[in-house]
Image (cartoon, rainbow, N blue to C red; front, side, top):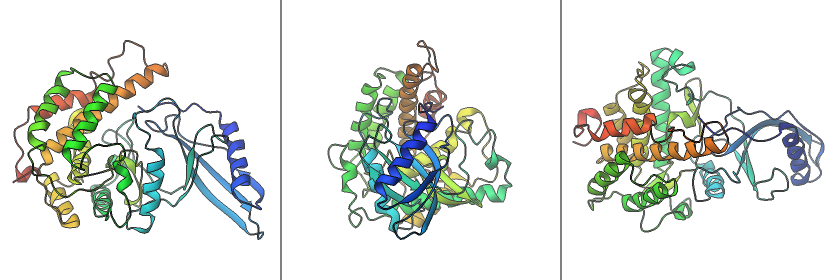
Amino acid sequence: MPVPAQRDRGEAREALTRWIEARQPGSEDVWVSEVGGPTYSGYSHETLLFDARWKDVAGRRVENRFVARVKPSRHTVFPDDAFAAEHRVMSALGSTDVPLPKVFGLENDPAFLGSPFFVMERLDGDVPMDNPPYTTQGWLLDAVPENQARVWWSGLEAMAAVNRVDIKAFDLGFLRASRTGEPGPASELAYWREYQSWVGANGVDALERAFERLDRELLDGSDGEPGLCWGDSRIGNQMFDDYTCVGVLDWEMATIAEPEMDLAWFIYFDRVFSEGLNALRPPGFPSHAASVERWEALTGRTVRRLQPYMIFAGVKFSLVLMRLGVLLVEFEVLPPDTEFGIKSFAMDFLARQLDEPPMSRSDGGRP
C-alpha cells in the first residue's frame, strides 16, 4: 500500500490558483476545481488532480485537466533526489513515440505547495490496480481475454519504445547522476547494495543469497549495449484507453542500463502479482516466451540474462517494500513492531525464485 496523502485540499486549491496567476502573465478569471486524488497516491510522490480555466492575455479562454506531481519533503522511498530528473526525462521524450502526457514547467519555488512540483495534462483512461492487485479484482480482470491481451501487448510495445530511445540524441546522460562507474550491471548492483544498507536490510538471508548469485551471473563481463531504462516498467504504471496504452507514468527509477532489465521487471511483476499472491494470471495474457520474442523484435536486442534480471527485480521490489514499511510506521498506519517488509509477499517470492531451475528459451529465458 502507498503512503497516505498529507495535505489540506482546500489550501492546495488556493495555492494552485495563485500559481496559475503568477506563472500565466495577464491571466484573468482564474478558476481551479476542487483538488482530487486518491487517499493513497503513490509510493513517494504526492499526486494532485485538478481542472483549471482562465482567460489569457489575449482574452482567449484556456481550459484543461491537470495532474501535479509534488516532490516529497521528508517521507522518501529513495535516498537520492530524482524529482527534477523525472520531469526532465518526460519532457525530453515528448517528441518520441513513447506515449506520455504533455508535461509543463517545473516549479522550484516552494512558496506555492511547500515543495517543488511539476504539472502534466491529465489523460483519460484506466490504470491496472496495485492495491488490490489487478490479478485479484478490477476492470482488467473483468475484461474479455482478447482485451486483456491488448493491454499486455500495448504495454509491452510502449515499454519497448522507451528502450529504443537514442540516449545521446535526447541528451539523457544526466540519468547517471545517482550511479557510479560505467552504465551496466556492476553500477546497478552497487547502487542497490547501497540502498540495502540505507533501508537497514543488511543480513537478510534471501537478499544476501540473491546478491551473491547476481554477482556471479550479471558480473560475467558480457554486458550488452546500455540504453534507456524506464525502471518501474509495469502495466501498473501505464494508463490505457480502449485497452491501448496512452501514458507511460512514473519515471522515478529511470536510468541508463541494459534495457533487458526493463523487460525482466515487466515480466517479474506479472509473476509476483499472480504466483506470488497465489492468484491466476488474466487468461488473455500472452506467454512470457512470446513476450520476449516480441520485445526482441521491437528493440533489435537479444535477451540473454532474463532470469538473473528477474531475480534482481525481486531484490529491488523487496527492498522498496521494506522502505515502505518504515514509512507506514512513521505515518502510524502500521505498528512499530510490524514485519511488513521483512515478511512481504515479494520477499517470500524472492526465496522461491532462488530455488527455481535455470530457465529455458521456452520459458522466456536464455537459450
